[in-house]
Length: 171
Image (cartoon, rainbow, N blue to C red; front, top):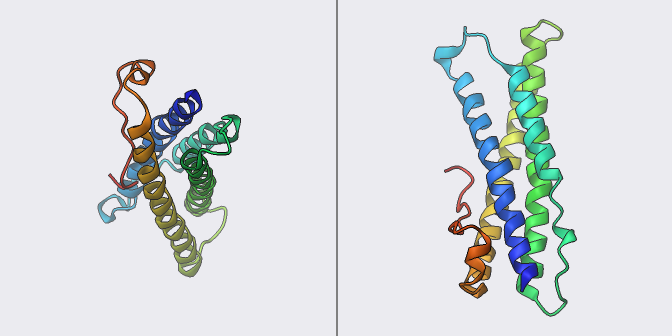
């Protein structure tokens, strides 16, 4: 069952390396969007760089590298759900990057951005974000089923770390 442990490691790696940093970047973006900071200079370039970094981190993860036996439908389902999450996560990062780039260009007076254009960028980002939340939840449910099947000896391979994923991407 080493393939299950490896699949769990990849998911944990995604949650720790990409998701956590993304959530921090998203919180900074939201704080920069508050009315009270409207006159404050924003770090659009820093946000864009962070989003690119977490996207690249997630893109380095390859669930297909784990060889899953054909008769293990649970592991195969998790692998499929994980691949969907990785793809949607990448799309969410791209959407945020587009929005931050548009705001940066407007702030630097490189181009104008209409309210309608910004509203559409924001809507696409929200829709993708909602889809990611749903996909992450689905993967977490499957992941918790998988954890039940991993015997106690495997816990040592994780350095004593408790298995935890995120019920919601909005913790």
